[in-house]
Amino acid sequence: MSSSSAAQQPGSFVLAQPLNGECAIPGDKSISHRSLMLGALAIGETIVSGMLEGEDVIGTANAMRALGAEIERDDKGLWHVWGRGIGGLIEPEQVLDMGNAGTGVRLIMGICAGYPMTVFFTGDGSLRKRPMGRIAKPLENMGARFISRDGYRLPMGMVGAKKPMPQTYELPVPSAQVKSAVLFAGLMAPGTTTVLETEHSRDHSERMLRFFGADVQAEQDNKHLHVRLQGQPTLKAANIVVPGDPSSAAFPVVAATICPGSDVLVKGVGLNPLRTGLFDTLIEMGADLTFVNEREEGGEPVADVRVRHAELRGVEVPPGRAPSMIDEYPILSVAASVAQGKTTMHGLAELRVKESDRLAAMARGLAASGVKVEEGEEHLVVHGGEGSVTGGATVQTELDHRLAMSFLILGLVAKAPVTIDDVAPIRTSFPNFLDLMANLGATLR
Ligand code: S3P
Image (cartoon, rainbow, N blue to C red):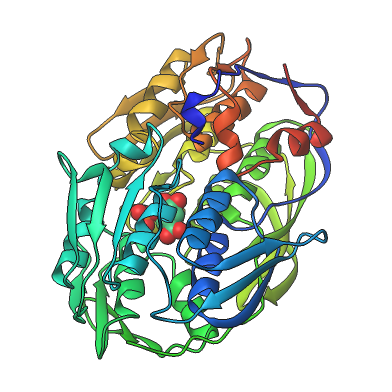
């Protein structure tokens, strides 16, 4: 069921003491989705540990079951996926309701595009507003057909290609979701499917496809990264260890950075270099982050991050950094609100088509909390400094989990509480967020 139908639960954070202690971060959302999808396309049993059990990922598990995979969670928290092999999926009998999950719906559209079957997709009020043309167009090139609401919005029906064709596709927007959908569709096509990207987006699909035995090569020329997949591989079941999600770690990391006296160890944070833009930016701003116990888990770099409070200064965040921190601008804006001086974030066009128009929603919520902001078409300027967050506002989070967590954390440094209209959307990506923050010292009122 989509979270839009539940009654709203407003809340605000109260800081009892400086944030202190250790916390373990839930599994990476991007990797969790992909482990279920590729597990379902592999032959044999894939076992996944560290799976994010948020609503978005549960939605993907249900969708892959409807497409014929057998998926079970055991009482130790391991997820078992018995795949059907490339070409083995079946037409779902029901509409696939993907809830709030852009990654879920877009990647599954890619998977289904190469099957001669009809699949219907929908989602919650947020997902139904988001553009799906960016996915439908390259999948149409391969032979799939779509019928949708105006502007390629959900609900949508798709008739997959009888004879999927490989293609070379240049991404018009830097998007790992589009790249992944094209590659996943290419699994059913003969020959080489190539995606060209000018700005590098997260490469979890490429890494995991290789891990399951597919031939995926990446080669950089003077303009593009060429990602090439050889179609119709045999994917072999593999055991996946999901690292902690750096996009979730971002919340306690920023909270400890901005609350005086704090000292927190955030354990098991995935540090794929295409995901670490926020940490780079915080360090430039003067944050005190130490990466300890660096290791590799399931083919991804991982470390524990020790965070101590630090005084921050405003910085310029270049547009080229956007793909590596695309989900972190809401929480970076919170850090910028207490940083001395001006922080300018460039290259934010994609924020307008996330779970909400995050650029507009951040600007509105910060301004309502007393922070001086300037919103441009593709940039945001935050004027920060001590005492700049007066608070006292109720912020609309528009079914957007990252806005909800960001504004709760803004309240930790506000003179009067910052209340969010609804804490429920947090469950989509970080189901234990409120308990984890309470253990560190921030409780929900
Ligand atoms: C994701 C890619 C990003 C990100 C989303 C997860 C993924 O979206 O915002 O939360 O798992 O591929 P885009 O690729 O559309 O930028």
